[in-house]
Amino acid sequence: MALQDDVGQDRNMRVLARWRQTARVLVEALPYILKYDHRTIVVKYGGNAMDDAIADNFSQDIVLMKQTGIDPVVVHGGGPQIGAMLKKLNISSAFIDGLRVTDEAAIGVVEMVLTGTINKQIVSGINKAGGKAVGISGKDGNLVVARKLMRMKMDPQTLEKKPVDLGYVGEPEKVNPEVLKTFIASDLIPVIAPIGVGRAGETYNINADTVAGSVASAVNAARLILLTDVEGVLDRDGKLIPHLTVAEAKKLIEDGTISGGMIPKIETAIDAVVGGVDAAVILDGRIPHVLLLELFTEHGAGTMITRE
Image 1 (cartoon, helix red, strand yellow):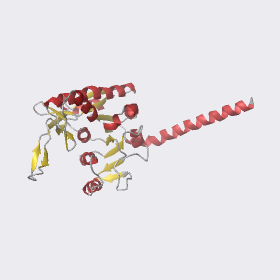
Image 2 (image 1 turned 90 degrees about the vertical axis):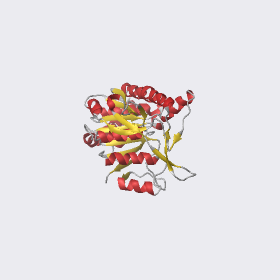
Image 3 (image 1 turned 60 degrees about the vertical axis):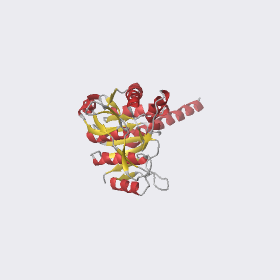
């Protein structure tokens, strides 16, 4: 009987120790919860970060952010899903400098996949986790007024730069934050598909990182968080760089340390910070609950970019 009592007491002590650890974590998070209270954080969600295995973690993080007083705004991509649907419909697709050439046949598919399938999946996931999400695109309420994106490319024969027609690929000309402020002032969480509307009513496919950065600047966000499939910005030895100023980030692009697909993400982060966002962060979206690690712990995660 005494042995059973000792075993039961030992089990209770272990349970109590776990709950004490949970309490310590909550107390440690308190300063950060207060720091971001009633502040807007824009999260770009896409790529491998949209994998089904961690989608539930993402939804839970967004709901918890809202419940702690943060106003999250989600902007999502969907390149792989768009590519799969275009292939299924036998619509050819090509890329120039990482941007999908979007002709008249493709733009309808792009809009369908982004504003339909993907947007509603994310909305449903957040709602399932206990939040109240609403899906919109940049066309709703003229949230993202866009213009045609122009690109110049070197002709290998003449060595002259010539314009390249990307079709219905655009870039934000103006973001109207009034649409989002209505959601932010309520208990609703906006989930934005990166589709813009032109001055003449035409539809534009816009890079999701670019939309997220423009939205973050327009709403004076405390943070722009770009979820990707890498740890963050790495130095030449492959080690994570936890913090960069705008000047340092530009220098790393110039010397080739930052290269490839990371360049446009860093450029988006720089533009957002220069545009008034407190800080931009590149995070590995494959890590479970990485948003909470970044926002509510002293260590943080990924690479943060600030003005100074």
